[in-house]
Each structure stands twice: as structure tokens, then as C-alpha cells.
Amino acid sequence: MKIDIAPVLADAAPAHRYLRNAWYVALWAQDLEPGKPFARTILSEPLVFFRREDGRPVAMVDRCPHRFAALSMGRILPGDRIMCPYHGLEFGADGACVHNPHGNGQVPATARVRSYPVVEKHTLLWIWMGDREADESLIPDYSCFDGVDPVRVSKRDYLRMDASCELVVNNLLDTSHTSYVHTGILGTGDTVAARTEIQEDRGTVRISRISDNSEVPSMYRDLTPASIQRTTKWNLIRWNAPSNIIIQGGVGGPGGDPAQGFGYDGCHLLTPETDRSAHYHFAAVRWNLISDDMAENEAIRQRISQLRRFAFADQDAPIIEMQQRRIDASREPLRPMLLSVDVGAVRCQRVLKQLLENDR
Image (tube, rainbow, N blue to C red; front, top):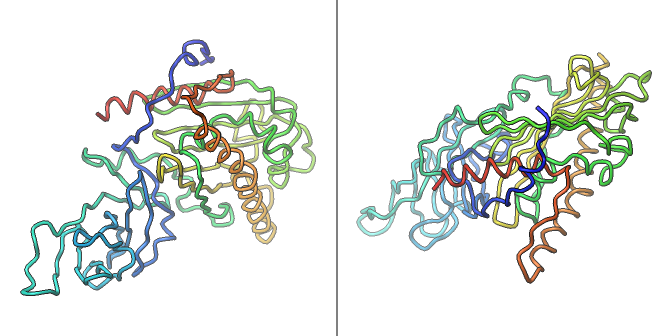
């Protein structure tokens, strides 16, 4: 489907509030160790995560109802309990107080902490913080992580961004910036011009950018046979509300055909920490390996991990965080000037705006 620019770019930006009835990535599953509480703020709410004895994850508000101490500073006890570090109250996995060591031991009716559904899937922990029943079938498909040879997967990495989740998402939905911010790494001067198409299906938005006769960017050099110097370069982007993205970046396949090309699925999972900060989880899964040498593939894995972190932490982050500071410094509301390259981001904003309305 071809882009219909005019009506899309006419849309206003969505209201600045959280979509709560949705799945957000809380953290990589590997980062939640047995027997250790893990603190993280999500949607401006402090949370504590820990594992039950059978390994299943737990998420609850990180605040004891007695004197509001952080439960994440306490200890995990046998019986799937977390103990407040201040006065020793113990809370079960459902958030109910199960032990009061003081006085006659009676547990007040208000001794309860709100808990949230959390699911481990695709090597990630997903949390649902809405008031509707959590539907696991709505977790986006990141099965590219499931059962894959570790040599194909870059480091499961993390950044905390001092910018709104929306700014980071908009950056990822507009890959034309790679020709300038990541020139030579993710894009080149050849990738400024691209055939762009957009599709929307039941809330999932797909954006494709295909550049013909492009120099192979350095991020893809190790993935591509040496005989290929100029080729088709493509990005196929999938956005799932509210802020989960896969960018399949590839080279070599005519018209963006992964079966004939080389590249990786770049997974970008954004979760609001606050209105002006975000959790950014990212990793890439390679396909169509050009070498059977596992030592060489491991070296490539490490180089991709390092280059991707450099691109996001040292190139994207300074620009996006400065964007946020410039927006905050404005004495009047700002509405961005829009270009044709913004069509994907604005289409996603349209979907998100409708979901926010439904969330009421």
C-alpha cells in the first residue's frame, strides 16, 4: 500500500499519558536473579520484581504500606515472601502481608501492596499495569529470540534514556536519520533516498524503506559476502503499541527479500520510566550466516553488539536527550514541523491516540 501523506500528517500528536492496558517490557529475564529483588520505575510507579521459588516472576509496588520504605531494599524469604527492610513486615507474591512481627502479630486489613501480572516470554519479562484482565496473547511476537543459537544474538543490552519514550520511538520509526546520525554505520548517503511504504493491520504498523544501489554500511559488512559492494539496502519496521519495535535491517536481497539477503532483526523495546525518561532494551538476531566458523561468528556477534551500543548510546542518545531539554525549555507548547519521513511515526501516533481513547 502506498503512503497517503496528507491526511496522516494532518493528525495531531497523541495526548501525553500512558496507555495502561498494554504489555510493556520490564527487563531482560536474565537480569532477574533468584533470591534478589530488582527495583525499576515503570509508568512513573516504583516497582519491585523477584522470582518465586519455582522461578516465576513477581511484580508489585515498591512501597511498604506502613512507613513507605522501599521493599526492594529488603530480603527475599522462603515461601515466596519479601521482607520490608524497615520493620520486618513480610508480603507474599500477591502483595498481601503474611507476617507482622510486632505486638500480637495481627495483620491490619490495609497491609497490602498492589501487585501486577508479569509474564516471562521471548527471554523478556512483560508487565501489564492496566485495570483490564491481562491477555497474554497480546504480547508482541519476539519469537526470533526463542531457541536461537547464542552466536546469532547480540548482547541483550539496556540504556536508560533521559527523554520521553515517544521521542525514542519516533527516532526508531524514522530510519532516514541513519544517513546523518549513523553515517557509515547503519546508513550512508545512498540511503537518504528510499522507496517508502506503510501498512496498518489491527493496530500493527509496518513501515518499509528500500534503497537501491546502496553502499553496504559497516554494520552489515561482516554479514555480507565480500563480492557484494553495492546492493539493495532495506529496513522493514514493525511497531506494536505502545512502544515495541522490530527493525529488520538487511542488504543483498532484491526489493527487500530476506530469503536472498543478509542482516538481522533489530529488536527495540521501549518502556516509559517517567514522562521524561525511558527504559530502552535492545538486541539483534542475525539470519543467513555467511560463515560456519563459530569463532568468526562470535567475533562478529561482539562487533555488532559494540557497534549497536555505540550507535544508540553515543550517537542517538545525545541528540534525543537534547531534544527533550529543548522541548522542556520552551515557554510555549511546541508542535513539530513534519516532513514526509515522519509519516510512519505519525501513523503510529494515530493508532496510539485511539488506543488511549479506548483506555478511558
